[in-house]
Amino acid sequence: MTIDASPESSAFGFEGQSYYEHRRLRLYDAVVVHASNRLLWRCPKSRLLDHYNDWITSRHLEVGPGSGYYLDHCRFPAGTPELTLLDLNPDPLKFAAHRLHRYTPRCVQADILEPLPDFVGSGFTSIAYNYVMHCLPEPPGGKQIVFKHLREALAPDGVLFGSTVLSQGVKHTALSRRFNILYQRQGSFHNQHDSVHGLHQALEEHFASHWIEVRGSVALFAARASQTTAPRRPGASLDPR
Image 1 (spheres, one colour):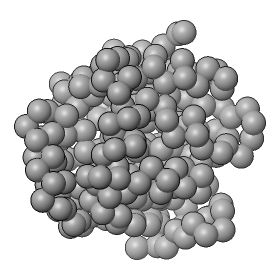
Image 2: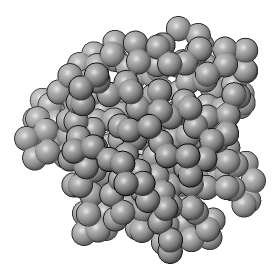
Image 3: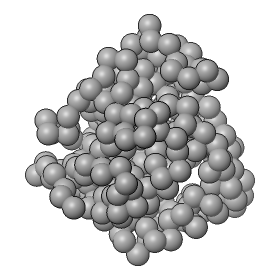
């Protein structure tokens, strides 16, 4: 497997992604996808998988693929999608690429806190930014810079979608709050200041229309650069905010 790598990276980006090494990725499905989503964050994997099925297209960029679970189980509109995986950490790239070998994904090692290198490409009709934002440390200027960088890689009628665990503006149980703080102390979460309001502002700044759904402690979102483009699938509304 070949990884196209960019020399440009920030200390902030590496700090946010270094937690997911190979041994942790082997447990990711059991711990995060199946257990934490249901018991802690109260946004089950079925809802997140539906989110993928609502928005994913055949020319897709996956930012922070993790274990590759959702790409492995979602329904691509075409049987042979053009799939690109992007992460600063090579371990998730290797892990997910092996799992998704039937799609022969392209792997790119780059930092989303920096402008994406030209070789990443552009014109993606969908970009997923799923369970990544809460792992990113707050750089100077804020995390919203990521939305600017990802929008530049979108096709004019493309959609950015994803989800993130928030600390503010969502409902936490005593258990989820305890684990959220624990993960912050461990350095795997950096979402102390992440809020629904902040997410609204960031999407509004960089996209013409966006949609947010709060489920438990998780915000699911989708956004388009063009306000005139209708949602691609029935049942997935994308209301201008």
